[in-house]
Structure formats: C-alpha cells, structure tokens
Image (cartoon, chains in turn purple, red):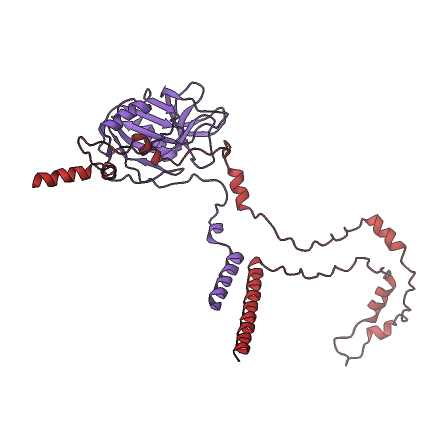
Length: 212
Length: 194
C-alpha cells in the first residue's frame, strides 16, 4: 500500500517536473495546413428506401432524388471528409450544404460521392441560403477583398460568396464563404461544373429521431 | 413448415432494430418500412451545431505562436548595471581632485658610463642595465589610483521547489503521519488487550 502511494507520488512528481508528452508536440512556428487523412468509406453504400427518398423531398436541398448515401462511420470532426466516387456513373452533380449540421454532401446522379465538415459565415457575415448555381471556377484564386488564398474557388454569388478550400477547424468561420478541407475541394473542383446547383440551407432538427 | 419459418424470419427481420442494422449495412429489404429517417442518418455524421461565441474569422496564427511561447519565465536576480565609462573631461576632473602630489621616489644616482660599458665578464645574462630603469624612472608620471568600483558579489538565487517536489513532500508527510497513527493505534490496541 505504502509502496503504491510512493510510486504514485513519484509519478506525479515526474509528471510535474518534465511535463506530459502533449506539450512537446505543440507546433512550432507558422501554422501549417493540417493534413487529415481521408476517412475510408465503408464497403457498401446505404441505398435509400422509398420513405427516405420521400423524406428527402420534404427536408429539401436535393436537386435530384437521392439514391444512395456514403456509409460514414460515426460523426465527422473538423477537417474530416469522405470522398468515394468509384463506380458511380456520370451524371448531374449537385451540392447540398446544411448550416445546422455543418455538413456538405456532393451528389452525382443521385449517389452521394463526397461529404465534409464545412466552415460557413460568421454571425455578422452570414452565408446566404438558397439555391445558387456555380458561377465561376478558379483553381488558385486569391481574395481581393481580404487578400487571402482561396484554393479551388467555386463562386456562388456576385459579391464573393464561394466554396473554397480552407483550414477547417473548430472555432473558425468565414466572411460568408463555405470553407471545405482543401483536399476535398480538389476532388470537388474536378467533378463540379459551372452551372451545377448548390443548395445552402439550415435544416430544423427532427424531434422524432427514430420512428418506424 | 418452411413457410412458417420464413414468415417468422420476415417478422423478426421487420423489427426496427433489425431494419436499422440492415439498412446501415446497405441491404434493401423490399417492402420493409425503414426505421431510420434520412435526417437522422445525416445528423449522425454531424459534429454538432456551431457553438456560440467560439468564432474567429482571423487566422489563429497569433494564438499558435502565443501557445508555443513559454507563459512564465523564471527571472534570475537582476543586478544594477555597471557604471558607464566616464568621458575624458570627467576623468580629468576625478583624476585631478583626489590626487595627492606624490613626490617622485628618490632616484639612484645615474650610473657612470664606466660601470655600464665594462661589466664584469662573469655576470650572467640577467644583468639589467640600471640606466634604463633610471631613465624610465625620471620620465614616469605618477598614475592615480583607478576609481572603478569592485564587481558586485553574485549571491546565489534561492531554489524554489518544483510543484512535483512539493507534492512528494506533502505525500511523505502524509505517509509519516499515517504510519505514526497506525503505530499509536496498534500500541493502544495492545495496551487495551493487555
């Protein structure tokens, strides 16, 4: 008993003296873009039932009736994304952004090919909601208003709101743009075309989560 | 018999839990009612709503830099700065005042040429020409004593125990106290028993 106490005391002393390993892993110098690994989507897709497709019409934000979703394991964190467009046939692309859940879903031909956690406008600089077609695409755009890099920009409005790659992390917001992880933005930039619609909405939470 | 089994299996498979599991595995059961709503499936991926008051549109470079800098520093004892070297005019003033007229030391009579030119052959090489010393002595001016203060004595910084050391000390006291209490209790018990 006594030995355990002494060992615990020694361990505490060492901890205070030398610190935990977490302190030493703190980043030094400039902020670097975090390279979060792409989460692997599970094997089979989740094919929606007729009821779920009906529900999709009700909750809105879908240009075409969704056919399948990506199988995502658990909640995504800031910086996470899933992209899997293997074996998904060519088709019309649309994007759905939900500000309440902070998620973006990309669909091609009704099948979801990508999803990511997004950053959106701060309280005084809100991202506009509605259906907005992509007006312009630019790979290495730079904001003239804020003098900041906006990789893989897909402009949505005339006054500067766009989807672009950014450092998606907790506590950050944009001046109105929709920020996605840069690697995800690269994938999206390749599949989306000028004219593809983007739905931005703030969904209301469903009080009855699971019903049969 | 087989039909009964099949029906019971279908009935079992229609339970919400089974449907949810099957739906999540991507298996479509024709005619079966879905248990999970689309909204719930989408919400399950969400990191949650954005928290109020936790926003910044600026790049958090300053925060990261501040986080890497040490928050506290242990300052050593601060010593007063050394007095700056005085200017020539000041030096003259200080030199002139305290200098007491020092009478030049009485010089030995300058040696005659004869003694210098014809030194004894037996003398070693360490023979110093006194003439030079004498000449040097005449030309010398009395140098005043330097007025620089002595360097301050460095006192050692008292050691402050680390938090870990404090903890260990307190724990040691606790153990000692517990041991003493145990000893007292056991001796008291022995006394009672006796």
